[in-house]
Image (cartoon, helix red, strand yellow):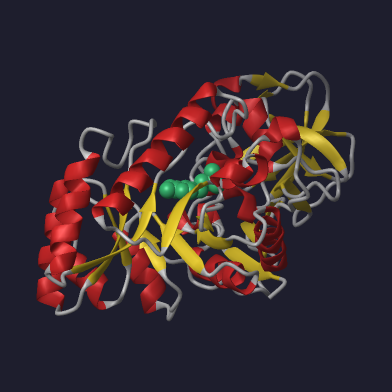
Length: 382
Ligand SMILES: *Cc1c(COP(=O)(O)O)cnc(C)c1O
């Protein structure tokens, strides 16, 4: 589900997400510099964390990334269909994936289990060319990849398929569980297990082009995790992977706005929205904002999240509905069509996605990624 390029002249769209492509370019360039010039794989899965996969991928590449990473094979196929030629790593797979199609369009595939090595090798036979494979080690997250007891068998199977000309093992990688908690003892343990996994594979005869481990948090806090390639996701979109340590000079790329749909004056004691969980304390002006949980505004943000309206922060009044929510403007002048900024880089005093995340007890990743396909993306800074 690629987003249609939005019509930039459509400024009165009820809700829209402006995406600053220059910010993505600058963030990627900054991350590459912070990684000491190590090659960068920009992670563009989940529509580039809600920013729009194809546009964000192009911006990341022009900012200095030379690789792209996605979660699902379908995302990799979409990038190829859009004409992206850079190497693209697909990180997740289930049995029966269209691996032959992936090999045909030159996607890099992950193998962390024996069945993956076997299915990918068979698909390469069908496609008539070797598959590019990255072996994934589970170094302590207990998620994808082969743990230490399965690793030797996966390495041997991959080498056997390579000897038959069916696959090229181009990479070895793993993923951190707690890189966003610098000093967590699991970080050093995972570094150690990764080193052993790489050594074992190299002794067995694997000659990887790239060994990679670092996500955004590790890029910014853990130089020893750089290896040959780093994989920033959230930081490329300008949000801090370790908010307690600050913004690291990153610039948030997404600004979510909506035009006020309606304004009304109501009496003191008026119940607002479903369940009347907000009751106006006095006679006041209410503004209706046409964005709701159907657009990705979290319903848990009812009576909690702030937005910028009329130059001031205002809290959402009452429940967030599927398509709209209400704010209490008190006696401030406001008209239909006025812009409300839900979150953005904070330039005008609006909350950031990180502010919303903190208020909700979640991470900024979820705030931007959940902004739905109903909200047009408007690209700026091309
Ligand atoms: C999503 C992802 C990343 C990026 O993580 P961030 O914390 O957003 O930087 C890196 N590597 C893999 C395998 C991922 O799935």
